[in-house]
Image (cartoon, rainbow, N blue to C red; front, side, top):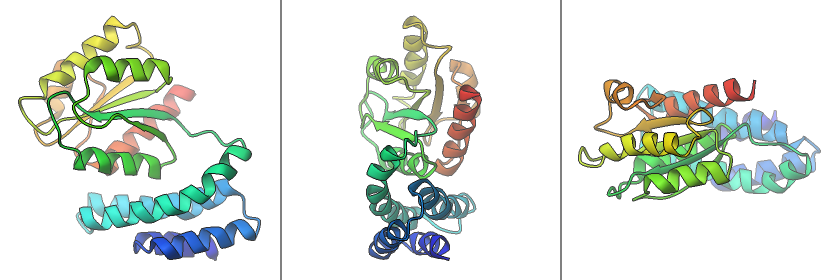
Length: 213
């Protein structure tokens, strides 16, 4: 079955093969949504689970994500034509004063792997930028990353900025990064802390389906 093959090639990080198989599936008349979900997302989910269980590591995730991107580029125009909406929208960034982005990029890939639309704000992002983006783009989730204990405090400012902007009840705030803990999440009033990228994607999906229900 071609969709299974797409999933397996994606897990192996074979970007060229994934692109060729996705094109073949399109030519065979398989709907873009089906190719995305049963081929690409399926493969990325397997990688996500393995990553959680320490069976694969960051390099494998990165090559799988690259293969996913190759395939999804071919599908994007078709998904738009089929009227397929992303299952939710997330703005993500590393907080002000922090320039680390490997963790953030992993989370972004996992979120996209779940079929969510992601607005990547990059690093050194101010609380206002997070909140304004969420407001202007109708994001369901703000995802903040910090790798330094010195920049963690900015996450509390993001929560406050969302409250001040009057959007706190419309948006979930997720936080993560090496120094961040569940206790800290509760302390600043954020909605979720997750220890790794795959769990972050699962949690984001949960939030988006709750909010669209």
